[in-house]
Length: 202
Image (cartoon, rainbow, N blue to C red; front, side, top):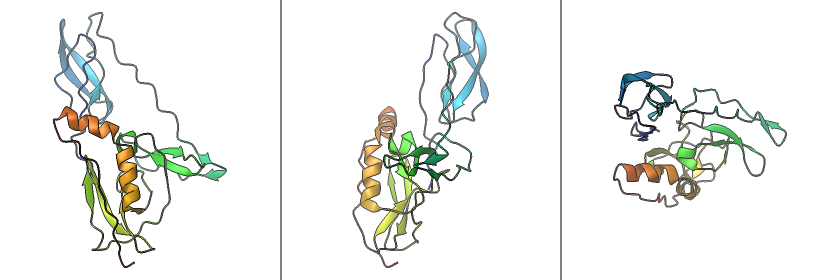
């Protein structure tokens, strides 16, 4: 699964202006211009969020970015597997589900929802197509009960397994606010996900 590098948030902060928001590496610096001359700005999120231009005008203060809270190490008495890959803006963050199971979340993909981890990975099957929805690619898979599903587990730290197609549709649509906003920013149509149920031979 690939999330395109079109994840760009156009931010205008203070009287200083930068040269344009582009995908970046956190901590990377670039030159920028403001009303008193040139200075630098620092990347604070990989989809292209930068500090204010570090110039000397009164308005040119840096953005305060609070650190993210640490993910839970256990939920309901069960130890949660660690998130082993490098954290990314769209990658999974640890969370506890409403029924106290270890889960994973991503505001860009699932909004505020915490989705249970550790589901069966399923198998590839020609009867189960892959799908795309609003900057997200989902891999087709076949569940042990013969239902086609979709997986997002190639995104860093997700290990949800193969989720039944209509359940993935529900989760993707319920958490679409950030992706819908990005679509409107780039004058793209906002189209809800629609994944009809399908059957397969496991």
